[in-house]
Amino acid sequence: MKCAVWLLLLLLSIAGMSGCSVINYEEEETVEEVREENVLTVALPQELRSLDSTVLSDPRTANTILPLIFDVPVYNNYDGTFSPGLFLTWNSGEGGREWTVTLRQNVRFHNGEAFDAQSVEMTFQYMQEQNSMPFSFYFQELLEVKTVNKYTVIFRFSDPVSSLPELVQHVYLIAPGDFQTLGADGYFAAPSGCGPFLFDSWEENTLILTRNDAWWGAEEGVTNVDQLIFRTISDDSYRISQLTDHEADLICEITAEQMMMLEQKKEIEIYTEESDTICWSGFSCDEGKLFHDRNARLAVWYAVNRRLICDSVLAGGQEWLWPVTQRFIGYDEEAARSVTSYDTYLSRVYLSQCDYDKTPVKIIVESEKLPQCDEVAQFFAVMLEAVGFSADLEIIEPGQWEETWQRGDYDMFISALTISENTVPWQYQYMLTEYNIAYNKDNSEEMSSVYKACLNDVVPFCSWFRIENRVAWLKGVSDFTVNPDQTISFYRVKKAS
Image: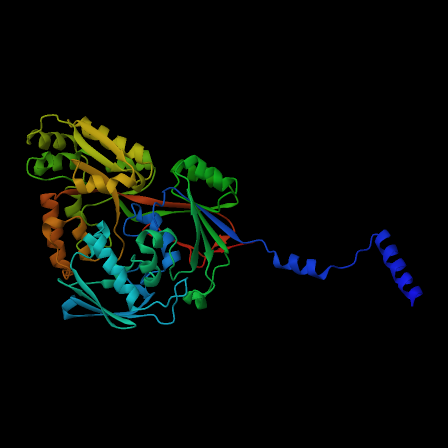
C-alpha cells in the first residue's frame, strides 16, 4: 500500500516537471462565467439635466433616453399613425371630450411593481401639481384622469381632443409604490420604469443603462447590447474625435464640414435628412412693448434671410413657409411665399412706421435647441441691425431658459420646436394662441382660412427654417431608428461583437 502511494506521488511530480498541468475544474468554470459585455456608447451634444420629463429643458435628448427606461403609452410611426405601447386601445366619446383607454396587462416595472391604472392616475396627478410647461400647454383642457378598473382609465377634457395619442406619446408613466416611498426627487434620481433598459448609474455627464431581459416587448426581438452608455459632449470637434477614435459608436448633430470629413472614413456610416424641427421666434407683445406693434414684427419678418442662414451657416436645412408647409393641412404655397421673403427695403419701411427709439431689442436664444447656436444667433443680430434695429443678444443655458421665458424678460426669443408629420390642429395652438384654434378643427378649408388670417396678421411668432438631422455611427451598429423629430429609437439596437 505504501509503495502504491509513493508511486502516485512520483508520477505527479514527473508530470509537473515535464510542463503538464493538472486541470482545475473550479478555475475553468470561473473563466466561462466571465464574458465581455457588448457596450454601445452614444455621444450627445445636449446635457441631460434630469430624468423627470416634466422639467427637462431639452426634449430631443430626453425623448431619446427616457423611452428606454420608462417606455411610452403609444409609439409614433411618423406616418400619421400610432401603435400600442403601454396603452393598448384608445377610443373617443362625447365628441372628443372623453377618451377611454385600456392598458397592457402583465407588464412590470423594473422594481417588480405591476403596471396598472394607478400608475397612469398618479403620473397625471403629479404632472398637474407641477404645472410644468409641457403639461400647461398640452393638457390645459384636461379635467381628470379617472380609474374605471385595474386596466381601464378615462381621460376627460373641457374641449374636444382630436388625437389623444398625439398628446400622450411623450408621457412617461411612474411606478406608484417607489414614487410614494421615495418622493419625486428620490424616484427620478434612479427611476424604475417599464422599458427595455434599466437605469444603472448617472455620474456627471455619463448615463449608463443595462438591458432589461424581462421587457414585455422582447417577443418582437431584443437588443444584443448589454450596456448602453450616453455621454454628453458639447464640443463638436471632440464629439467627432470620439467617433473616429472608436471611443463612441454613434454621435448626433454634426456640421456640414464635419460630415464631409467623416464621409472619407470607410468604417463610418452617415445619415442626413431634413427633420421636423424648426427654428422659430416669439415676441413679447404686451401693451407698451415694441412688438405690440404689428409693423415692428413685420420689420423683423422681412429682415431675416432664411436662405443665407441655411446655406452659409448650417450648409443645410430648408426655408420654412410660415405658418404651414408641405404635408400639413391648409398648406398654400402661393399665400405663404407672398410674405415669406427677404426684403430689407420693406423691413426698413415697416420699422419707420412704428415708434422705435433705438432702445436695444433684447433677444434671448435657447442655447442647446439650435445647432451652431452662436453663429446662427449672431446672423440674426447682424441682419436686424442692418435694417435699423439695435440688438442686445443673450444666449441662455437651458437651466435658466424656462425661468427667463416665463418671466417675460425679453423682446424676442429664438428657439426650436418640433412639428411632426402627423401634427393635428391643436399643436399649432402652442404658437397661435391669439386664434384659440379649437381641438376639433381639422376641416381643411376651415384650417386654411385660419392660416391665411395668420399670414395677413403676422401673429406673435415667426418660423425661419427646418433643421437638418445629421447622425454618424460606426459600421456594425444597426437596428436603430433616426426619427424626424431628431430623437433616436434604440429599443432593439444591435452592435456586432
